[in-house]
Length: 273
Image 1 (cartoon, rainbow, N blue to C red):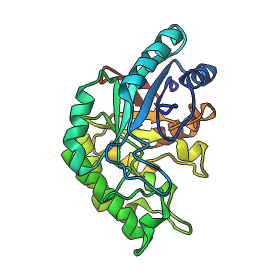
Image 2: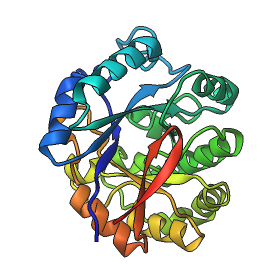
Image 3: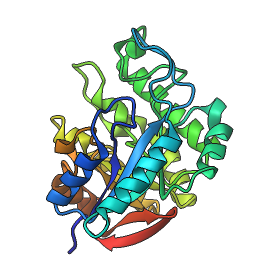
Image 4: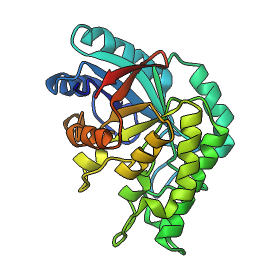
């Protein structure tokens, strides 16, 4: 049996929804016994403004991020191996732009996430207005499938059932209610050699005993031949680094996985769980 050596989904002050210095995220990783930390800053092209927001808060200044990441990597050498990653927000009309962008930088790792459906973010209550919550969840999964059908330049799909974090209560989420579309997603990922981000934010920062995606979806992915999983805390503050990893690891083992991956230069390395 192994242990998880790297957090492969973290954000710093380079993401529009974090103020955490990179140095503090790295220090937290070292404190928790990690030997790798992959920053995956948000890059959501054409993200709509919301409320008092002006402009796109999720448009990444990639040059500044790269320069700071390389400086942090040099400073942390010998304690934590810092990796240069990104979390791109998918939308069908920007698939080509996202792919060109990724090819323009020497990323170690790319997460593709579905943060918007028809330019609406499930984080906000208006996403659920005028329809049932089940219809909203189905739209989210349908949008996810459409995005990964069009966009291929990534390594893992981020937090597959992310929407369940934000559905207004009361709501009972049953993944099997959407199995027709989630099977299409998981089968395509497995066939194309893509992976899943075992995102533990809902464990550490919420009230769940399961990551996103949940146990049932992870089992289904494994049964379809899916092999690649990574572990991410989705931390936006140092306190969250590696958060929920113990429970997330247990869920992955229960789903039938015996290995997980880290990435360098877009190539996976497998480690025992």
